[in-house]
Amino acid sequence: MTERERFRRLMRGEAVDRPPLLEEGVRKTVLRRWHDEGLPTGMTHVTQFGLTPHENLGPDLTYANRYFGRLFDLPARDYHRAFSVSRRRFPHDWRRTAKRIEEREHIVCISASRGFFQALGVGDWPTLEQVLLATRERPASVRDRLDMYGDFCARMLDLTLDDVDPEFIYLSEPISDNAGPLISPAMFSEFMLPVYEKIIAVAHRHGCDNILVTTYGNSARLFPAMIEAGVTMLWLAEAPDVPELDYRALRRQFGPTLGLIGGIPLDILGDAPIERIADRLQAIVPPLLSEGRYIPLAGGRVRAGVSWAAYRRYREVLAEMLGG
Image (cartoon, rainbow, N blue to C red; front, side, top):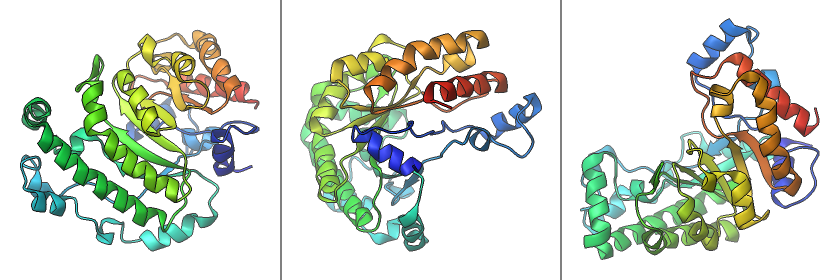
């Protein structure tokens, strides 16, 4: 069974021999230090443990640099130009890429949205302040911009799905700090859910039912609205270790139909004594695995504070839990 097949069957609620072995992302500087600490020369964590990097494909959804700092105040015609629908947004080798992945064994996803703040041009403190004030003082302008952004994302996704058949659609939502989202759930529902609904309608039309949101910080108060709009999977990254983001709590709240990727706090790898890693993983992973639709993984990029010994122990324990 390939990792692609495992992912699709798992997220359909079907039996698999084990979940896919995804990898977290490790910086080259960390890998160099790990080689000094015992990782065999010429190997990476991916080759050492048989992990599968997933491939994130699709068009460039950003706006040109010339619009930075003024995107939100652009007239409608110029906003359309900033987010123009064009095949020029695809990589130059897109046709070869689409052909290459037809018979793939690994997992492919398509990026379909960069999130609320990116759609409105937030890139520094002044533009963040501008947008936050606008949600209260100029809500009609916010709605108009996001209506155009939703059309842009949906049309670009339509072009993409004409060429490729991904395992899931990827929506990035950097909208929160560790205390919570920077706009209220009601505002998120008003402004951003129509964007999600346009994207999800296109995905469903092309036969893709796996809709994943990756979010950072503490976005727990937004999850009910996201799921109501059609999101079926969560992958929390760089999230604070708080009760409402514990994957076991999310399962109790939303049930096993919500797919989950991640959920292993990074402090298990960085701060906890190595001899406690097995006990902490035992408390988290088996209960989630037993309900299905779960891929265990550390919740964020592995950084400099994680030793090779700790990472190796974490991966060895996971392998035992997954059956080898």
